Length: 185
Image (cartoon, rainbow, N blue to C red):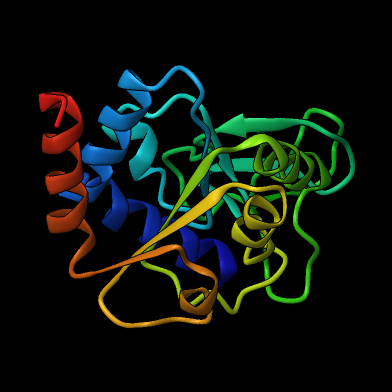
């Protein structure tokens, strides 16, 4: 039943395209040499948009990982959907996403926190700011002297910590920011 749900979700996501916010974030990566996208999204649309420097804190629905060893593969999905995926070590595999109650992958969290300690600016886009430990990222940036810019349709738990709050749809606001950055003004 679990695999049926994930196969269904993968099929839906494959039909989706990156939205203007995804495109703007990918463009930001192209123009900024020191950039890291830290996302809680598991849909892989940032990768489709072109982001290469990213940490997917909650994993990626298109990856499958072994329940016993470190083996992780992209898009397991034999055509016979009734088959359960098994690793070459013999153990069952599962979607490489964080399930409720599981800790975030230590390497991903470490990379996000280390980058946050040295970041001049963090853009916090479209989050409630209540999912921890991910919500620590902007707080770490702020604690180490960086600026927090929040883009959201409504105030969040991050808003009191934000140096700038830009209210609106992520696609609209980020597209406008990119126009300003690429124009030089």
